[in-house]
Length: 92
Ligand SMILES: [Cu+2]
Image (cartoon, rainbow, N blue to C red):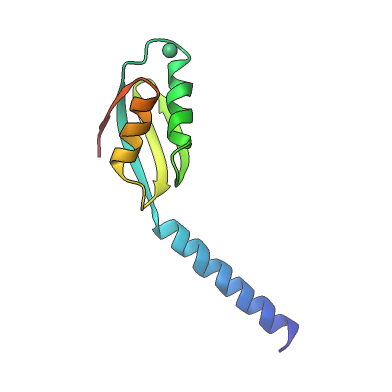
């Protein structure tokens, strides 16, 4: 097999994999209650980021936005928030 053929196959594979990764993601918005100080939002964010399959988490005010694998359940996220001492409601 020629080198450029290998490169083409590798490129096609990378494209297919990234398409799969993109298709398997979901964004979940949650309302977080019980945050009382400036350290609460980072604590809630870290708790969300620790959930297996979570790719990114942002907490702004009472609103948390999580990008995660499709396999991640809403309840996994709510439980993580509860574990950090807050309550959460799924918005979408
Ligand atoms: Cu706090």
